[in-house]
Image (cartoon, rainbow, N blue to C red; front, side, top):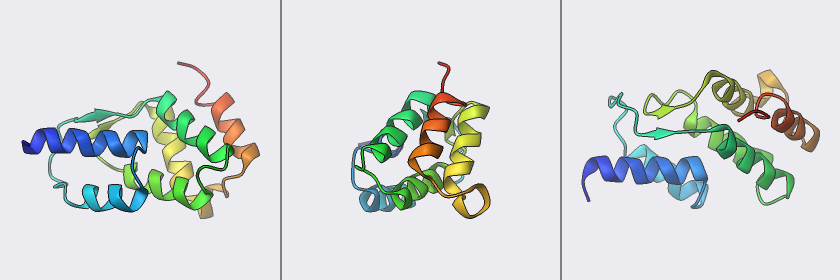
Length: 115
């Protein structure tokens, strides 16, 4: 598999959270940081999906934080500003407040509400 295909697959697994976080984190760690070409897009729907999985207790607040940390600052993942702001909030619970079902619902109906 080519490096570009591997990058796209790895980033899609991260965005969609289709594998255990430990496996995704190991895969992401293998990607070079100096590739600034956009390989994937993180959408509002992707973030809503992760928050809904959290609200159904399929993911813990720590897992959501870890997921957001893996995405935050990646130059090879394109996202609109409202999504970037939500990722920042989720990745920084000490600064932005701990994730709770109420906070998740507020994000889903607020900044992630529009398509």
